[in-house]
Image (cartoon, rainbow, N blue to C red; front, top):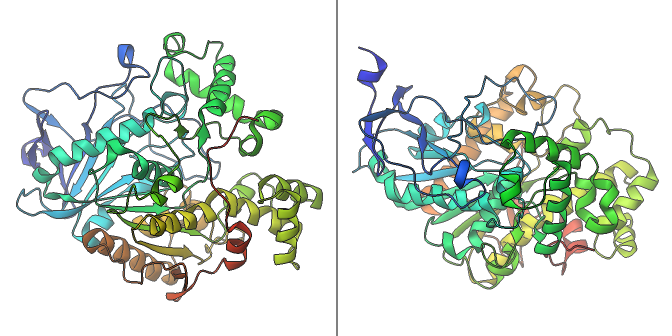
Length: 508
């Protein structure tokens, strides 16, 4: 019997799909949740997929949206499928029985809003689906100039609109795969976490999920003025006007080159773009007043997500990954650290003094790394939990402090280390930097098992196994070789940032 004859078949709203039976799971890949965003649909909001006749093979991941090059040091990726059918969804389920009503976890990938693909081997969801007896879902969404640049004549935040469309697909179809549409948890890391923070603030996403897990929320959201100015610079690199009509004449994959070129030149725009310029990241959600009317922190403080259970956290040494990847480790002079402290710490020179006072024995490199960890991921994540509490909701908080067992001992608890621990994919993608030979240590295996149990328990009950965050005691789950509940470890940083508002970044 061929696999096309033996695989499980599920009928979706657009047509029947046949998947594969793999290691005790039924797996469906590459199911369209929206029409290809090309041709007349380029730079538009997603629309429903065209229905099909017969049974569609759902054996392979759909092609990734156009994306920029990633970090060096990633594990070799298998050849990626080609084509324009970018907006597809994947499902791992123990049993596609409509009566099963299992909890559903929907993964939103990160990648600095400029890259990402649900078919990356790092996001293989089979371990989580089995551990949690849950239905796991992942999907593609547009990034970079296709999804997050503010063009004239196009809706803002098209990548977020893709995510809403995918979650609508889940609500409409997941029962047929054995999932419970009333028990949907969205979870994501880095820009995926920033996307989820945005969804929590968006009225059009309300009711599409019950719980949310945000891992390392970025604090970067653009004002409309800043987004338009960056869009003009991006279009200039592409030799086009910053309009959807003109840019639609350019091959989507050619536009990624313009994004890469601008990223390498952004420091020259510091007088206009301020804090975002040294990040070399010209993409972020835009507070445009329509798709996203305000920042997540303001929205949650006003109660926008009080009915959504929230689990939020970050890693202790987030920025260490970028320091090592850029070859800057051991090469940060005090003048660069001082300038970076003045740019990112609250209050400029006063913020620099606060950091030097709080960490008097630290080197220039440690201060350089700490302030960027705090500004970009650490304090935005903690503040999201505080905003949720202020708005009448509850949140559970964690911090990953366990250091990666890389051979050089240089990465620490760096950005992205939580991904292999969560998915159990120790030899995939950036995990190749952290786990030599792709082999987890016994400590890593124990920590991974704890994280998988906690995340899936939260998806099932809203309780990951430790107390909800209280701004008086500030107890959090510390993820390390030995698990413990303790006061938030970065109290010194928290005090420096107390009272700071993470607003949409302005055009100077």
